[in-house]
Length: 331
Ligand code: CP
Image (cartoon, rainbow, N blue to C red; front, side, top):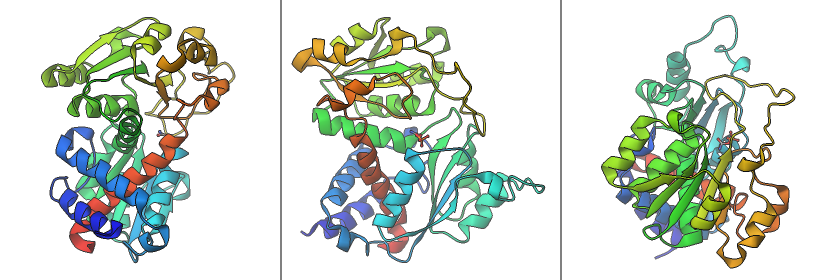
């Protein structure tokens, strides 16, 4: 069967096992995730000239209430590769939500959903994506809401992990950073649902690890433990995802950079020397967010540094989600 026909069949199959909007990882079964990964792989193999007719005529709404490099551009690239046109905003100050009117999230979403066939939303409030889904007449994809979740980042990263490691059931994944951050939280939930062998965490404060997240791991029966040293984590893991400890307040609309805001504490930094010392046993390295200094740039040429390839994988995943969510009406 031609790749586009396979993509059409998988999109319809996916539409039967996902909710109308993608708000949290918890709403995706392992079966749905497997189809998303298959569909992403299929889109990767498609001829771009043919793919651009796949959902031609559709309109993708991109509502970004917070700054973004990778997520917004990733969604826009994904939508355009499928033939959709893109409308939206990357700065809410240019809309009526940012001026005199203080237009509500509910109204912006309801209004914009009249103009689009699918929308992605990034917002600084926990739970904003759910509110958007409740007020939209078209499917919503959560592009990160406060400290809640970031499902498309998680799916793209797990897709990258599977490409690197083939399977997860016998692998140890190391995670560095605050597990309250939406991307790490969503990745952890996804890995647990997919039956990862073990998770190793190096966190800034064990007392602040979200209890509901550990409840999910305990309920599923995922093995996990905490380590103090980055070298122990690198040695024990097949793949390490780090977000470091330099990140903004996800509940703020905008975080200005101020001198001294980036910690240089060595215990959080992965260096080329760390990877070279492990030779062939060095883990793959991923990063779900903008880098400050938690991975030195000398690591970029290491064969197991995959944090730039991650971006392209995220695009195939977003194409799969857009297609699955639109399939019911469009395919
Ligand atoms: N991962 C992520 O959300 O990055 P951006 O803020 O650049 O979109």
